[in-house]
Length: 108
Ligand code: 5GP
Ligand code: ZN
Image 1 (cartoon, helix red, strand yellow):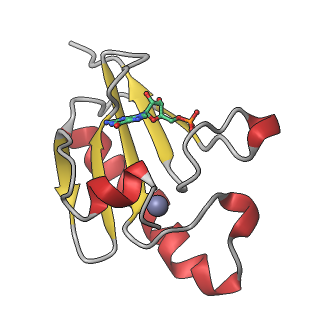
Image 2: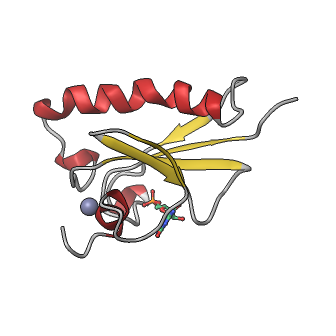
């Protein structure tokens, strides 16, 4: 999707504070953090939202969820964190490229 901001981040066309990347996903800090640690985990492939996922996306979605504790620990959130996936206009989604929010405050 040529006009999708997260596709541009995934392809390296616009900068982001990247914390993780592999062939399928990329994670980067949210530009307007709502917590001391707030990063987004997205698939590199353009998927509009959870509402447009299908059975074929199960492995990718499972991988994303399974990555959250790994990345959260690396960001200082070993004691816990929140996740959110805003879905659709009525779900408060603003960027229509699927993304998983991870938020938290590092504990001493
Ligand atoms: P949504 O409401 O769609 O779940 O949240 C979109 C999130 O993307 C917001 O928290 C917003 O701050 C973040 N965001 C929007 N544009 C950019 C950007 O260009 N770079 C980064 N790093 N985050 C962005
Ligand atoms: Zn996209």
